[in-house]
Length: 244
Image (cartoon, one colour):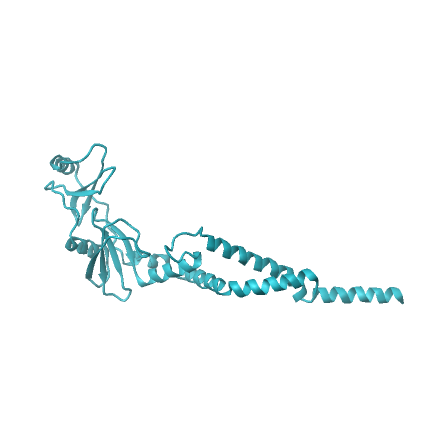
């Protein structure tokens, strides 16, 4: 074995030893990502398909006339909530407000009972909402609009639906499959805290070491195949032939 091959062998062995667990994580998580249907990870197969909301122009105009307190420059969105026409007013600063267009009354922040009805309407499974809790801080499972209601279902997937308290929108759908996906994603990108940053120094260092493992393996490849020994024997046979 040449000197370069011996150095490459030592580097290859030690780096491969250090990187073995992370490389295993990359392969396991990559296989899971390839096999797991993304629509099931996102719970799309149990999400109700809602028709586009229909609100008559006259009804919307009359409702907006009843609403007071909208700051100039606020964004106004007309939509429906549980089949009823509502107006979402989002100022440049501060929390959005939701109004009932029929009465002109503000209905946000939404109570837990309304959030449970929104979650039940969003979910087409056989189970009803079983538990509700208010979420006011971000976590690895939820990084959407806050505050939000978390509605849990007692199904086999331990499903949870998040409903924004200020807008009534479904902002996230979570299940056991999603949580496994998210955990493996954190291992894959080596962001063990937030599970979303794939530009971490740890990942960059690990991929650099992995690249060195591959390159040193390429250097070792000929010697592992016996190419160097075959080349020496060939040179020796030539020298013998010349001397004779």
